[in-house]
Length: 365
Image 1 (cartoon, one colour):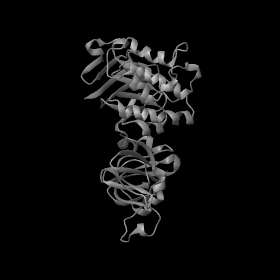
Image 2: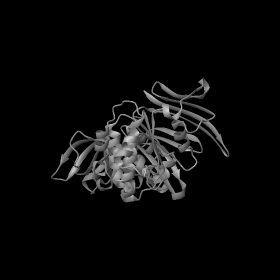
Image 3: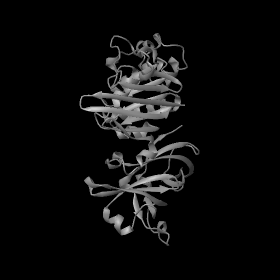
Image 4: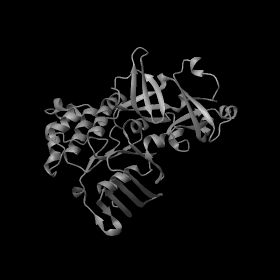
């Protein structure tokens, strides 16, 4: 089953033509510059904007099809909304704000106690919104949206108004939400760190068009996309914890066909984790007959094949995609390095990564 979305709409100065199919469960991030059409997608899904041409289906349930004359009003769509501003009722307690979401909701599987526990807001229930921090208000807003028993949750830059500390506070709760609920989420953000932390699927938008759509790990490693030209560009790896070596203070991760050593993790063996390898931290080398690993401090020397090469002119750099038996890394190197190493699509290469440069993002279970 999938969440199917297609939209055509004309605004002054831009024509939107956006279409994608994504898994029905999990978090789909809509990412791109201002004016790309991200918030328009949410407005159409919520029934707040009627496009010139639109079809939206959640699994086999069609909530909009302008060609067929189907346009469910917002109150019948079973769609939850979370905005930058939590928009809580100031005269109500947290508990009353939460129960407001239940008032007109049909019977569902998402219970009050379960939401309170999931979002860690039990201690906040008697308080009024003005006494809460920004992160606490957003958790309550998410809880209220969930208690409306939505079939689709829309989140429009929910962390944009928070400072770095408050954002760090709420990200673990959003990760728990992802793991606990089999609910499709469309998540709009300008912050790529939120994408790599939370999203399963990425829809990359620019000027009202879809540049690419697919699993986050596949999109993040592509050298030909704008995400590869960001300062924080890098590969996102879905990994399984294979073994711990307390004596060496290292953990071995299985990331597709690659094995990666990282500093010792608290995650149990067999659990799923997500890691990020910044492109600027990957060193490339020609395969050699000697054991390079015995001569350097690097733990990760991975044999791979060059998959694609693209220019990064603003940095006078070159982006190299490296295929590691189905798992991809992205390396940012100088054009001279590409020439000296004779790198070209199909060439054998070694990708070297320091254990300390691998960012561990979150548990995936």
